[in-house]
Length: 259
Image (tube, rainbow, N blue to C red; front, top):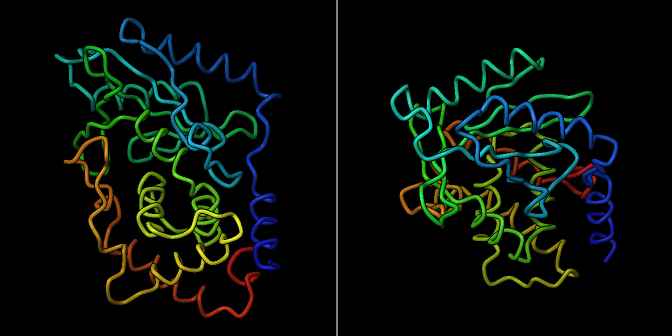
């Protein structure tokens, strides 16, 4: 029980902050994004951890997906040109702009915002195409499917603790992969809140394994069976997670794992 209370205190410590004081800044940003998208614009969607219920204060404060028409830039460079165009536009308005795999991170005052451009499939669907800059290719996915799956998983606290652990240890561990991996690792485990300590310890033990490590398992995007989420990690990044998990389970107290 004492361990559960400590982990709950960590969740409280890194709870996402209120955005009330940033309402105007967010509205101005959305207007700027719509202006950039011009005739390609459909909508700006809440797409990240806040929408899923897995937000922590150590990662981006807000995540937006800019939904664009299916034929946007179809004859002028496609998804890559969209990605590059948004990067150029954001750099002209905000500083710094951090290029990420599918998104860009900007800061407005002390607010960190991730922005992802995407082309929506035509018709009545939530499917979108994203550009993956690391691989110079594109992927189909469905953000709404992710939101529904993760928010209803019953694993929100375990996911948030793993995200906190990731940030404290400066690990490259893409959130969408981390979220579905957590659900997979805990398949069959109790969802009772009193089992939070047991469940999180089980995750760390699993990630520390030399044999049958879940990081070596194939995790597929349920919104697109050809999108392999486990491929988002490089071998080097995978080794870093395993090494850190080994160090964590060797700690005597929870304060040496999460602080």
